[in-house]
Length: 321
Image (cartoon, rainbow, N blue to C red; front, side):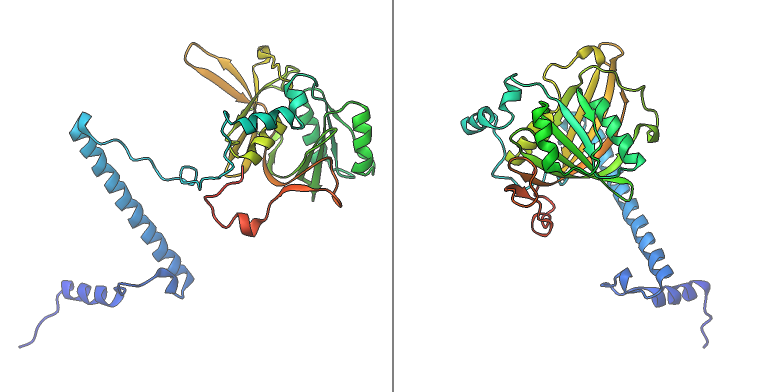
């Protein structure tokens, strides 16, 4: 007796040939296109399964009504953060003593008003110059001067003699701003940041009109450790303590995963419940590289903190600020 092969038998044989062993990984496929196809197929199946589970849970919650269990909090790097021993407690006496005696105490006690000098590295290009000019419209009482080859060690005494409280140096690489040195005068400290994601006003969509001369309000988010607390106070001391609410302008320094995001907005109250905001620009992101005691001194300066990437960035859930 001869058995006639049906279409179903042929399909079964083909599926058996192409079936993968249980412990198979797509990365073992040598052909690049085939490997990519299999990986995308795997991702699609995974997302479909995730969506089905989500719909099933939604139906169950709807059926249970008020008796439904509370929603699970999604796991993120922020809420899984490794606890830092230096996390600041606002009611700690030691913190209060440090705040009363540190370099910024004169500003917070109302004895000095911020006055900022903004300068650049030697021979700045157009984009860096425009960035400095726009920063000067954000920080009240800020003045832009060009270096003309002067060393920072010669610039700092001149700033102190003219009652400047900050020296801000914007460095560039290949015509793009890439570094910021922020030096508090006359006694320091000095912070060195990496700048990235710089967007000038012309490059931003749906931006508002140019900022006015009013002093902005300042928002500092998530500066929780002792180091972060110092950096937050350093940013706060750039702006006058009495914001002019008529201008409705806000400067925000938001720390997330040790990246400090800067945004500058104008707000308007539409009614008792709704508020509209417009971004004015510029925007940029800072990453702290080092914090040095005293004013800028690259050779003999004493460093309070230095970023050691291979040691400090080994655990993604441990943050310094």
